[in-house]
Figure (cartoon, helix red, strand yellow):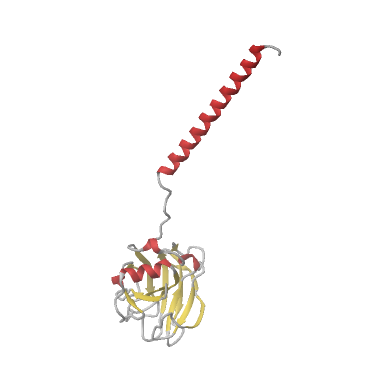
Length: 217
């Protein structure tokens, strides 16, 4: 799944989440993102200011949610920049699902320049229920990805006001292709059906000739 914001905000919204993080996170407010037509990497992005003393998060739309288990082992990535200054903390990625809340991205500190940040989708990249919580296991991350109910990216990276932009969010999920033997199997069935039709046709023709050769009864 990808959001590159070329034509709009693509269903992304804001969530104002109470601190410290709970499981599941407590959303105490929300709102609309700002769509930026001229700003982005390239142009076209979403943005927000710091909306409260709690933590502001970009909240992903439904297309990123559900069974994302095939993304395990890939890298979740996004582009971000601040309008001014340098972040004091990382732009956290928060994933919720399967009864767990996992936070990663501690080293993803945005600046005034566009940068691509990534979080490797393995357990060791995440902490359970808090930035300083216990390190997640691969099994816990797979549990979350298997039934992803919420995905957040935190632009609120300063202890004070800021204005942040987000672009090019990528969650790599794959569609499992049909086994290569299935098309061959289908072709074989079609061939078998054609052969049977030809045999039946030959038998009918032979029967007709036999009747005609016998003459009237």
